[in-house]
Image (tube, rainbow, N blue to C red):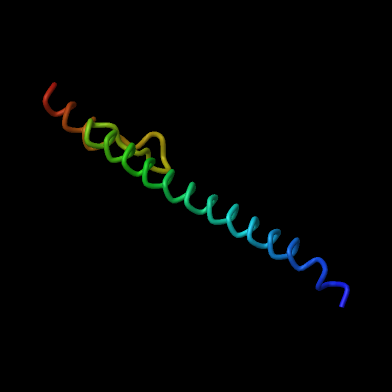
Length: 69
């Protein structure tokens, strides 16, 4: 019966934890969307992601080399 006296604190602690976890999930989702938009913008401007091999030329580099030849 002693736990009944602390039910308000227990409910408040769980509510605070749910709010904090929910806020973190929302923050991660919003940041993910922002990063995807930024990546799409960079790719639209001509920047591309690097592959696993640093020595592999990109399609753009190959096209520029063909134009120069």
